[in-house]
Image (tube, rainbow, N blue to C red; front, side):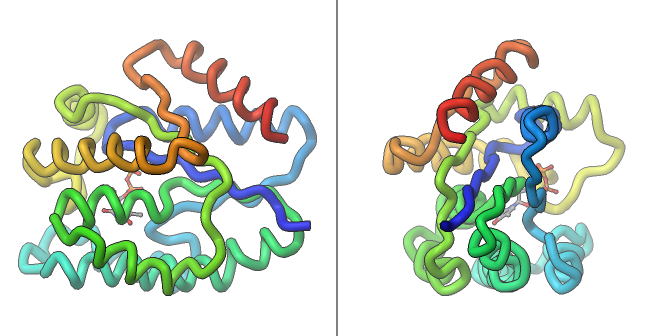
Length: 205
Ligand code: TYD
């Protein structure tokens, strides 16, 4: 039987990392082994691609190049890590997946449907079963990043207008895939958010 594929999405600074720690703990407490991984990256090749994508000195990067690099990283990730784990019946938890490309490159960079097409080659049959979407106003997200991080990568450096388009994209995706994407109000307290995620996880395992 195919395993369970969970992805976590959200704009920069939405508190995604904190809740990922909680998700890991949820499975640990139940003694369920998970394969935890992240994008861009997740493989040696993917991590190298990640360095190129996020490098602040590459100001000239064309949006289509960016989209294809994310998709290339994803193709390797699916072939090497995600696909085999799911075929072995494991639980895979992934920090960002295809929805990040749909939101950041499709809506943020305004590449539209091309992003879905490129990524269909990268992911094959492996769509997440459940996607937690951390919903936080981009204004608030930007504030949190500036307060908590010393350095920002190429994408985080983008203007608020870009992050607004990304966020609108996420909200559009939530509407488009209501059976898969669970929107979480990330402006609330950490524990409240955790409880909502745990409730959903209890339902699906
Ligand atoms: P990451 O360093 O993981 O940031 P975060 O901690 O916010 O998840 O992600 C790097 C950046 O890459 C982030 O700004 C989102 C962006 N991104 C895309 O634009 N497209 C994609 O397909 C993925 C996976 C990430």
